[in-house]
Length: 183
Image (cartoon, rainbow, N blue to C red; front, side, top):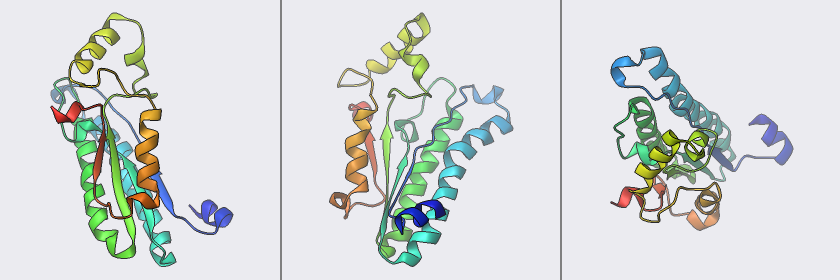
């Protein structure tokens, strides 16, 4: 963050896009594996927000924070996602808490919560094998728009939440999910 301040004179926007999962039934998952997911998805975001706030609040000119959550923060999953779902629900909670805490400083805090979209974390779901096809089929059955997300599907929400157009939005979780959480 200091490098950004040195280069640009100030900080205005923070985007935290962390995504770590460890798929395992809870009874088979060690506390260490659970903590690794929580650390990657929650503690890392919390630390980044903390560092951002320490620098941006004294600037006195407001700012924007966008966290990347997941539809799994709202919905459970039947196949070993207890750590991931809990971590993204915590991301949603952090979004709401900081949206309230930092509003008085003119800092908005919002989250984008996609369903499955193409990323390094989900690349296996886009492969051409039986497991990937079965997984895609199950997910697609729940998405009214009938397709999985692509990175460009996150560009519009990110630009909106990072711009002045979202100046009266804070503490919101915006679902970029093709309607997945609607039904």
